[in-house]
Amino acid sequence: KRSLNKAPHGYTVISDPTTNAPTKLVEVFEVRSGDCYKNPGANGWNDCDHDRERSELTENNSKPNRHGSEYWYGWNIYFPEDYINIYPTKTALGQFHQRSSHPIWMFDNASSSGGYMLEETVSEYGRTRHKLISEEDLRGQWHKIEVHAKWSRSDTGVFQVWVNGELKVDYKGKTMSAKEVYFKYGVYRSYMVNYKAENKVSEVPAQTVYYSNVKKGHTRENLVAQ
Image (tube, rainbow, N blue to C red; front, side, top):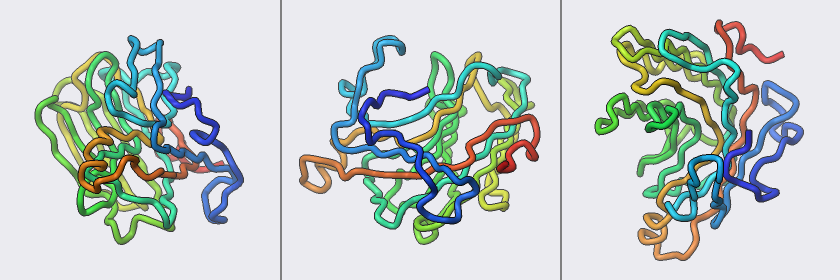
């Protein structure tokens, strides 16, 4: 389902403009300055009141991610050549969020050195960051992301991430702390005030990111584009 963006530019599905996506159609998420909305279905959460802007899709509940479950997740992501890193504002580009709790795994572009990172928040107060794609390799090409997760509130969990076929994260231990995890992807920006103050401007530049072949299954083979 669509998350907190009603603007016509926020989410579109178009023919692949890059000519080399794994699918003929790609999902385009675009967030412009001021793209914040209130979601009455999420306990009255209002992005505008919390200095957030976003366009995201949220996983449905047909196959819930609960303690003891095991799934594979996959997507391809493309950053256009004109994509701007808006650090020190944080741009999240996919997250495993916990229901009624904090996000526990977040993919982002949120450092001065740029690139595509994974932020691990197994403890709400402790954060570990894993570099997945460098700033130099980020734009102008499709990147294949594969995630294998054994969801567990004990030390039996697993969270592995492959980028373009290369294993980048091989975590074993607690992978969740709440009752359920759900996946969201798109573009989600937090604390625009940081970019505005750093660059002495009144607006944050727009950001556009493409996604293709977003899938979830019980095996790695389930992630192959059809």
